[in-house]
Every structure is written in C-alpha cells, then in structure tokens.
Image (cartoon, rainbow over all chains, first blue to last red; front, side):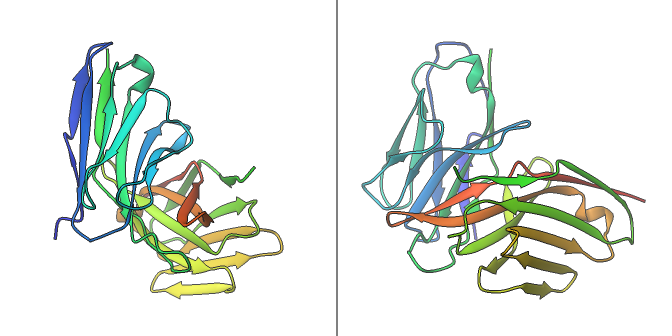
Length: 115
Length: 113
C-alpha cells in the first residue's frame, strides 16, 4: 500500500542546474499538490492540480513548473535552481471532491540543497 | 486574508496532558484538521472536526472548536514520548472546485521523560 511516493529523497544541486521531482499516487485521487517546507515558514503551496489536465499556481510558484502527466503522476521542475530553493518538498494528494472531507496524503518528502 | 496561527513550541512531561492551540480567520471553513509530522517524515492526518461540531474525541485525542472565537485546540491525554512531533493545524476551504488548505506554522511538541 504505497500511497504517495516521491523521488528522489535527497538531492544536492549546483546553482543553475535543473531537475525534476517526481510524485506518484496510487489512490485514484483527483487532486495533487506540491508544497515546500522551510523553518519558521510552515507549509507553502507551490502548485496544485485539481484534476488530470489542470494545474494552478499556489502561494509561491516562481521558479517552478509542474506537469500533471496523468491521474497518478504530478511532477515539479526547477529549471534553474537557486539557493533560495533549498527546502524540503512534499507532494500530497486528496480526493478533491467538493462537499466532502478529503484528507490530504503526503509523501515522505525530498530534501533539496542548492549550493 | 486567511490565516492560521499556532504557538511554535510546547514542552510537557510524559504522562501529562498536552494542549495545542490554533486560531483561524476564515469563518467559511468547513473542516479543521490536525496533522502530525514526525522527524524526517511527511505529514499524517491525526484527526479533523467538521465546522458544525463543538467537540470530537478519538481515544487519547480531544478536539475542541469554538466557532465564535475561531479557536481550535487539540488535547492529547497521557502524552507519551512517541507523541513528540510537529503538529499542524489547517483549515479547509474551497477555491472553485478545489479544496484548499490553509496551514499554521506548526507546534513542536517535546515530551520529556
């Protein structure tokens, strides 16, 4: 019972390098999210996808792009990494249907350091 | 704008009760959540309360909701060292057809033996 799987778990990048964080869920959820977590800043929403084929900006989208490849997968891309993007990144998913309590399930996180 | 506030730290002795408090601003919230994050892990839903309820009890956990004051609390009875974690309060609302969560910064609970 995998739930939400993120890869990689750890990554070190040099400033200016690019990378893609992968996320997959096996719960047939409609909605998927990318958050970053920084000390003293809590969880901040980067992008979300309410359903397959749609993506929307969250609170802190600058410097990131996303792709909802299919219902299962939602990737986050850093085109030109900056030290300010050093953070822990979490992918989450939920059923996303209006009017229902939809618990968000989280992956284990990707710890990214940009040097 | 919408906001969720929590105290950042709480320290208790093992066996005591812990009370973690949260205030929120969005009166249209339908659900209020408590999530737990253990070191090095993602967040897991601990419990939630629907906005038309005042209290919810689940084993050692008691959630109290004061809608008038927009205040939510989580009480953990007989706190154990395994309860040491960061606890996040979140309120749920809807943006279009999508459920949106507004998160507090998290309360770090330290349980001392």
